[in-house]
Image (tube, rainbow, N blue to C red):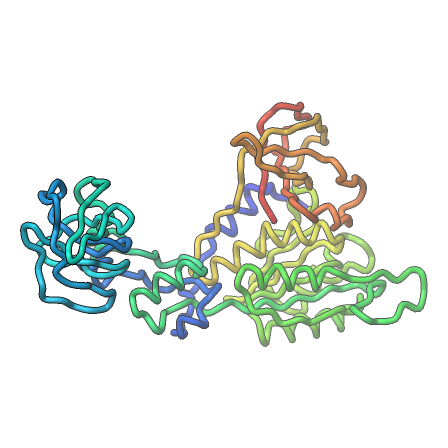
Length: 403
């Protein structure tokens, strides 16, 4: 009889896997969006490097704030260097982004003064240092601005551009091959010839998920339920990919060949096979040298949840990143019961209200683990421990945010 391990044990196995150092490459900054950073980004100089004006106005010495009139010595446009210094009884008209003239320490906005010929009178005083961006306001020289292992988003792109970084070191994206097995399933646009056939969404769904976490994807499509076809498809995937993900054919039925093929035909070593988990207890995680085969259930909701739990951490890990699932504390708004014995994940609606996450099951359908529509909209996954059998409305629960 198959021996199942706990969900916690399966996660420990993944978390402690020893992997080769991920390969790196250098990309032009404009091509680096979505990649994982392979180096710390360190400020080469402070920003701003010199005191800078934050708005249009007149640069003065604060001591002259109460003067009846201040002579305007010069204009100071952004991007220009002027030699004129602010002295007692004088000011320099200074624009947003301009360096503050020497001798000045405060900027009086244009709307706070009255122009009187070649002089100004301050009609609305400001505090010392007003509208002056000090050295290092953004960051200081030597400061680590973006840590190695960070995913590069628009803000990271902008910061690196401000540092004049044209190329950046990133981790190469892992390649994930995806296939769905089952003689009853049809690929996109494949015509249906009888009522027993169903449309496969698994391989398309998992391709999208893998890409959203930074992987490159080899799409292997739909494979017939026979050992030769499955073996050929997995071997094809291993020629191209770091991870091969299969769906279907991993349970205990007469036509569930995947687990046997992976072990006997492919020669991969199962790290675990069967987890006390709902949905998705019949899954297998196998290794062949530095490649992995993750065999997931065939039901759409099961395969999607288990991909999030097992494939996503590997995709992030292979990019040099540290996977931290978005688990939040939430208030359950209705009673819920489940059998004991398994860690379970249940689709819920998530909203943030009154500084708290709140979840409920309104509109979520119950039944088999095939109901992928339960993951639409602002869905999350309520996580319950094996010993939990009932949760009452108002209790706080753990929820994995997925959208």
